[in-house]
Length: 88
Image (cartoon, rainbow, N blue to C red; front, side, top):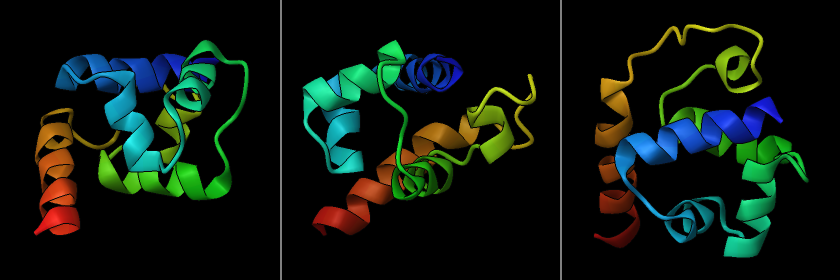
């Protein structure tokens, strides 16, 4: 459940829709919704994409620590950087 809360925090901070994050993870919106609701867990590959794309630590994402070692300000930069390389 904590993973879903953390995903929601990142998504809210970026003011993006679930469909946007689903696309980053290569899944459908309903599958992504299940991640946020805690109905399913992300795969190891999805965890890798999340931590690298949004510059968050594994421990923070999994709820093992309260403070992320990385900075929230990097979320938006990494998100834009990901899409820039994906489409251009």
